[in-house]
Amino acid sequence: MHDRRDATKHTEAAQQAVLTAGGLDWTDQRDFEDASRGFIARLETPTVHRADGQPSWDLTAYAFLEREEAPATVNPSLWRQARLNMLHGLFKVADRVYQVRGLDLSVISFIEGDSGWIVIDP
Image 1 (cartoon, rainbow, N blue to C red):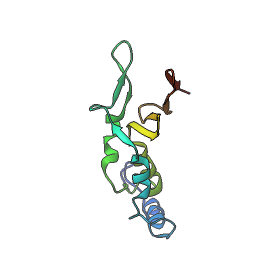
Image 2 (cartoon, rainbow, N blue to C red; image 1 turned 135 degrees about the vertical axis):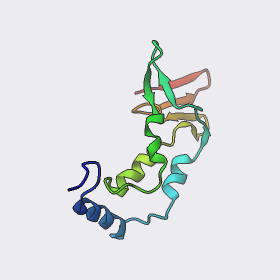
Image 3 (spheres, rainbow, N blue to C red; image 1 turned 60 degrees about the vertical axis):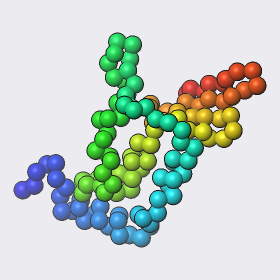
C-alpha cells in the first residue's frame, strides 16, 4: 500500500517516460531566458493585499516550485511550465512598453504614450 501523497509505480513510470521520450531537451534553458528577458524588478515579498490587508495573491505559497526537478506525482513538463509562471515582476517588452507579470491571473501592460500612459488591464 502506498501513501496517497506518493506516486504509484504506474504514475512514476509515466512521468519517467515523459523525461526520456526525447520530445524535450530538459537541459535547454532558452524558455527561462525568454521569460526573463527585459526583467527590471520584482517585489521583495510577492504578495498582493486587498484593502482589508488580507492577501489576494501570494506567490510565497508556491515556493515549492523553486525545486528544479518535478516530484514523481507531477508531469515534468507541467512542473517546468509552473516554474516559468513563477518569473514575476516588471518587464520591459519593447521601447515604451512594459508589463507586470506573475502577480495575478493575467498580465497588466503599460504603454508610454506621447501625452501619458496607456494601461491595459484585462
